[in-house]
Structure formats: C-alpha cells, structure tokens
Image (cartoon, rainbow, N blue to C red; front, side, top):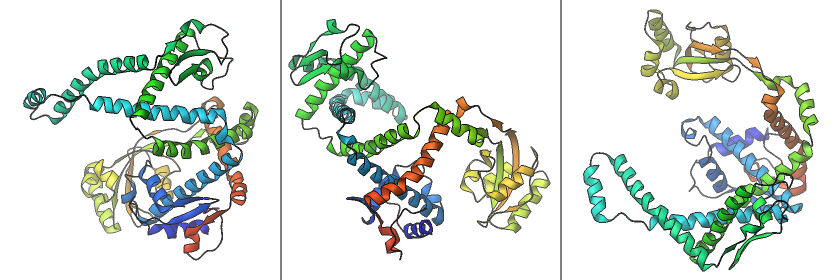
Amino acid sequence: MKSVVLALSLAGMQFAVNAGTQVLATVGSLQVTSADLNAAMASSPFSERFPAMNEDDQASLRGDMLRRLVTARLLTLEAQSLGLDKTVAYRQDVATFRLGLLYRSYMEKLRESVLVPDTTLAAMKQQFQKDPDGLAAAKAAWVSERYRPLKETTVKNLLKQANVRLHQERIVPGMRPDTVLAEGANIRVRYGDIMDGRESSTPLSPESVKEQLNQRVEFLVVAEAAAKQGADASAELRKYESERLPAVMMETKTKEWIPGEKVLKDWFDKHPGIAAIPERRHVGQVVLGSRKEAEAIKARINKGESLFVLAGKVSIDPVSRKQNGDVGWVVNGRGMPELDQALSRLKDGETSDVIATKDGSFHILTILERRPGRQETYDKVRDRVAQAIVNEKLQAYLPELERRHNVSWKVLQASGENGAGPAGR
C-alpha cells in the first residue's frame, strides 16, 4: 500500500532540477530532498526516455529512485557508526580521488591556455568554411600538438620546484611498505602508497612500481600546484564521499554474506533458474490507437503491404515508428503479458491477429527470427548469483537499519499516511 501512495505522491512532482526543494524523507540526521531526487533522475540512464513515459511509469521510477536514495543514506549512517569512514583504506581512497580532481583542474586550465592564433584560426575557417566538424577537429589537433610538450615542460618545472628526489635504487624484491621511494617539498611516497591496497602476496614488478611511482609523483606535484592556484574540489569530493561510503558499507556486508565459494554454489544449486536464458525473438510491430484502425492495417498487410513500411507511417509507438516497426530483440516473459502470449504462438514470418493490451493500444506483431533459450553453467552466472544473494540479504537487512537510524517518509505523511517505513515493503 505504501508503494502505491508513494507513487501517487510523486506523480505530480516535476522532473526538473530547479523545482522547489521539499524534504521527501529523513534518515537519522540526513535528508532526501526533491532536489536530490531530481538530480538523481537527471543523471540516470532513463532520463532521456522519462518525459515520454506515462504518469504512472514516471511516478514508479521516481518512487524507486527515492527508495534507492534512502537506502544510500542508511548505508552511510551505518558505515559511519562502524567507523568505516575513518579507516586508512577509505581515507586513502578519498585522498587519491581529491588528487585526481586537482590534477584534472590544473591540466584543464593548462590546456585552455593554449590558444589558436587569430591568423591560424582565420586560415582554418577559410579551409573548413562548410565543414564545422572539420574545423573543430583541426582546432583540437592544433591545441593537442602544442599542449603535449607544454604539459611535459610544466611537470618537469614543478618537480624541480618541489625538489623531488626519486629513490628508484630502493625498488628491490622484498621491500617493505614503508620504504620511501620519493620525497620532496610536501611530498613523500612510500611503496605502500604504490601498492594502494593490493595484497602483499601479489607484489608489483619493478617496472610497474617505477611507472606508478612516476605517475603518483606527477599527480602530487600538479595537485599541489592546483591547490596553490586556489582550485577547489570540495563540492565534487563531498559528492564522491556520499557515493563511496555506502559502497564501502556494501562491500563490507558482501564479504560477510558471501564468505566463500560454497555459499555461491549452494545458492546456485537451489536456484537453477538463475542460469536459464529465455528465448529471444527479433520482433516487428505496428501499434494503433483503436481496434478499427488496427483491423484496417491488418487487412492491408494481408493483401501484401509491408508491416514495417506501414509502422514507419502510422504506428503510434514512437520507437516502432522511428525504427519502421523493428523493435529489436525481445526476451520471452519480459514484455506485456498479452504480447508475450501472442508471440509464444507465432511462427517466424507470420503476422499476428490484432492484440489489445491493458493500456488501450492495439498491436500487430511478427517475428523475424528467434534465438532458443538455454541453460548456462555456474561459472557463466557466478556474478549474477552473487548479486542475487546480496539483493536477498539486503532486503532483510534494510528493516534493521531503518529501526536503528529512524527513517521518516515525509512523502507518505503528506499523502495522509503517518506510518514510517520503506515504500514498497
């Protein structure tokens, strides 16, 4: 019931980042606002398709995204309560990401400083006056050609200014993690920094250590220079931490839930269906808004007209119309039930009768070709098994986290429900 109310509550919310901010849920001391939800929706894979969806589908997707955001907040609070944000590995991870942000900022400014002279630019415009893509490519090539030596010279100067000294003679088998391989002003790189969390049982080759040492030293001196120039990576860093900490919590729980291969194999033996690959069909269709229209189109197809040509002209489904009726490969059991049933009875090359669906549309289908279903081996679906176990465990784990960290669903309360609890449970 709560998932239905949540969807109805979200149905009227606009899909726009600049919409007014409203608190949709609180998780302990943290909030999930409409701005958070809009930002998450805008960066999701289905953002481009969202405006074309009907209101119910939009609300369902927004509800699902809201539950994901609440889950992320729960995992963040739990990770903090366990001190995972204070571990050496996590702090190194964040520090490395910060270096990357500062490095990128400095190099982007360096590249922007390479300007195409007016005379050269005029000559390019004359050469590519009817080819804007060619002009853009020519400008990019000119800048890149001069940026590379500029970058190399700049890094050398920064290393010199920082008085960096490399101790490559210390790169020998059996060196300790605290072995200092480079040092200079505000710079100190140990072998442990190069290992970056790798198991000591799988040491890097001397060549790899030297390569990564040079890369890390370059990152450090450039990031230091960026910071001195006033580069501010704090906003991006906070966003990264907000995404990384829940992931660290999930990594921790995954190790607890799946301590060894036996857990995976036992689950696989009990759920063989996870290895089943259903039949796939290459489907063509034309979709009409009324049975009368559909029957008229069906009659034209029976007389020899092409379903695909007609779909490109009259189909009300934007995908099948744009693609002239070719909707690609459809997995058995994952479409509308009425269409799945019709396809299961259809032979390759046949055209179906008119099929009515619950959304009020009328379909005419054909199958171009099909790929039979099959059963995969454990090795092929191991990752899928692991994800299935994690999903099961997480669903049982979330109510425990909600009790511990006090989730309050403001969207449900605004809709007339006063209960606190996850939508969709």
